[in-house]
Image 1 (spheres, rainbow, N blue to C red):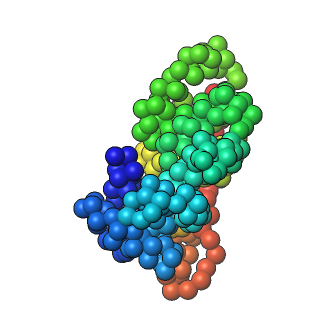
Image 2 (tube, helix red, strand yellow):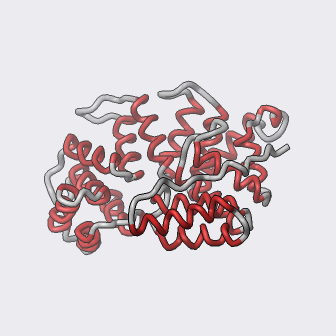
Length: 301
């Protein structure tokens, strides 16, 4: 059943940083839902773990391991979403999108929550947001924004997102006769897909900063900065390290951040050397935040 699968998939979809959440997932996989519910509650209410809050929300929503209660499900989804769970934001958006017996539809609220979920890397949220922009539901109709969110969904692995991307591209001939209407985000997307590493670096920077009409998306920033860094774009290695240092769009990892700063520093990127030094200082005391380098953006003709 879908709700059981959703709970089991927590193990592979989320970080589950709390030991109580991890234990709860293991119990849910074995069918011990009542005990899992208790552990998810502990993780959420006592440890503030967003994955635990999501687990509680799912179980209240589908009456697994406890009595069903949509209002309590929404309460815990909100806690999880506020704590950084993209899946919780997406689930909450779906409730407002479709409505329930107790909760009226709110398409505007749904679009805002889908946007948060998509920024966190939830493909379902990205695809649904693309649909809303394509049809003017809860947002002003915008074919290019629709295209952008279908791209997100497709890149994350949504076959439906890929289908919708192809359908929208063919229907409105966006990459054909109307190429002159494409913005920098679209042009760099095309360039990156064709193997241009600077295009990938540009995309990473745009998503990192929310510039050039790109929505701020740590998840997508990390994805494209990683491609560019692995290809030898050193400023992207520094920028990627900033995300690892601060746990944005990726699990916080100081060692990985130091490694990436070191790679860029060794090749002469001065800001990376400073960031490396600052991170070492951070381990022993306070310091200022690392900086993203704004020297990558090149307009792709």
